[in-house]
Length: 50
Image (tube, one colour):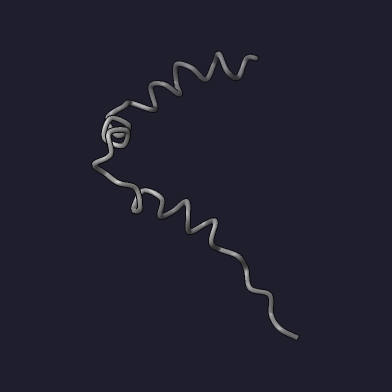
C-alpha cells in the first residue's frame, strides 16, 4: 500500500504569503503601519455582542 501524502500546500501558502507579496505595493505599505491590535480591541466588543 502506498502511504498517503498530506497536502501541505495550503499551510505553506499562508506561512509564506507575506514573502510573496509586493512590499512596495500601495496597499501593503500602510497596512503594516496600522495598529491592528487597537482596531481589534475597540471593535471586538461590538462584533462579538451581535
